[in-house]
Image 1 (tube, rainbow, N blue to C red):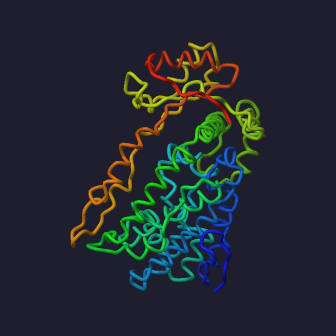
Image 2: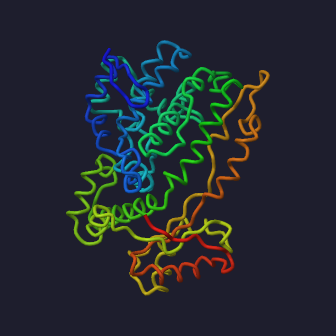
Length: 395
């Protein structure tokens, strides 16, 4: 055993399998990928990486596997350590564009485990790469420990992200949750004794979304990065597969070297000269179903740009998905029966409706086009004129 000092879990013990996997290029790449993408533009301390998070998930998985048959334990430990190797640069910032071009999500890692040094290590320890991949995707009963409604992945990233950003919302009782999670009828369920710990986890997640994950500066920077990456793929021949294998620094270098629009975006991100909010509003301000435009954002950007007399590349429309809380599918064991967690807790039941209040439509543009783009965007999306708009102060 080797011991690593971790600011969240104190000491993490690593066995020979973990150490062998950590030494592979696939795991080492995660040291160069920020867990929170561009959140350090808002929270300067948010420079922690996918590598640290992976160690934390491995650590929590080790505390859960006593409930699992011995022959599957090493597979699950490997899955916990490898669960994020499918992430591209800047984590979730490039996740959508990689999935759009490859048709595979970041946890669909079967192809990455078939060959290379990770595959060699797994086979050396008599582990099946395909089984490990299925655990990571949550396709096995025991894989629910890593990928399900209430899993060790969430338990680690919520606390870790809160710690490094400095916000006060990361209070999750790992020990209590792990102690109260059980397998029943091949499903990971929560005993009622862990309900308050689960409430704390879901409330933390609810508060972290508007404060960190969906902070407007983060959304703007991520949207700009996506537009730059789209330019590289569509105009410079960047392969989406190669993009997935890059780290943060290599992507920024690629954008700088490409020249043109991609280089402009890279310079703006480097110097924190970001686009500004021309329109930023919630569902209550909209006269029509704005979500239908998610499938054709480019058309919306083009029409808004024409109305504002701006270039289409200087208008970014950000339409997030309708909020949904996947944890609502979690089950709680009440008097021997499995019931949905939102029926076991009125607090959790109210979170889904409350999450609608955090949703924002964003239209972003350079400062010089901000007013004209805002007016054109309000016309395009038929924003109610009698609705109080958010004051667009910038950090």
